[in-house]
Image 1 (cartoon, rainbow, N blue to C red):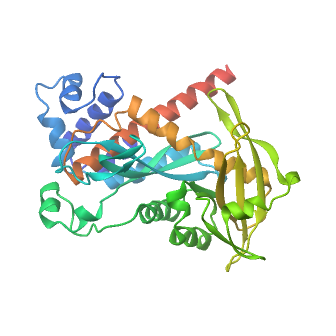
Image 2 (image 1 turned 180 degrees about the vertical axis):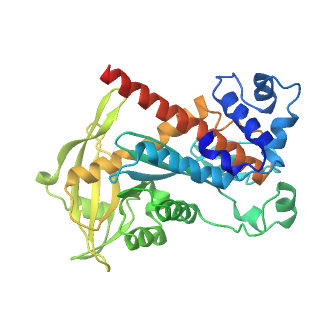
Image 3 (image 1 turned 60 degrees about the vertical axis):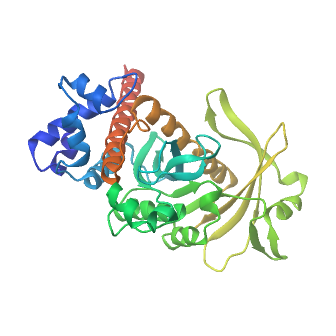
Length: 356
């Protein structure tokens, strides 16, 4: 909490924020302003509600300090920035950003609130370092709903890849050490995101659909058509990283593609050993790298799912019962801070046990 103390204008909200984070870490059956206030010894939730809505403190500043805290502990030049979204099913239509939209949490279209997150994944560990609440078009153009939810006038509609670009730029501009970025098909399909990463010479391994088109010496080909041309000898069995039940082995193949800019470009294909199902990735690196490196980066993408699971299960990331734009950002930022503390505390304890 000393790391973020300067983001609070007065000692009272700073102390309240500390009590709030302790409440998130307390393993309460349900984390909300009532239960966290009770955990802190308050007679009512008013103080916690004030912290999230009206108290004077800088949630974006805390986010920046959180990023510096994480990179100070885990920072590595070979780190990967992972972008992904998660949604929370909601009732009603007044909570900021809530609309009928697809959410992977439910696996279907639901009345939900969706946010895009940035994970910092380094050899030493991984955790969330940034967040952007997705504002659907139906919200962006509705002054009445915006006013009730307290959405600032400068907030306009932005696609999920645009939100990802914003977070990656924020991290890199702050000097966050990283060599790669990765994400699912939503981000792989966006030429603006790919162009921005190439401009910054940040390598990427981005999932794409089978219909995604690549420029090759034989012309423009779909990913699945290009994969069908790969000879049997092109496939190699490699691990995408360790999972709960050991290493995750798949068959992998790659082929160089053409591009208008500098650097190296490839189609990477993953084949399930049992179902033979294929997955496709568009890849770029400013310098040539071996296949195993691209496979490693592709496997790192699952770290963000682990962060969502830990954040929701251990730090109350999805238990925000708040309606306004400001309150959502404040709750989620403090939950990310709690998750970062747990991540680094666990890694520190593990390192101490290894050296004991």
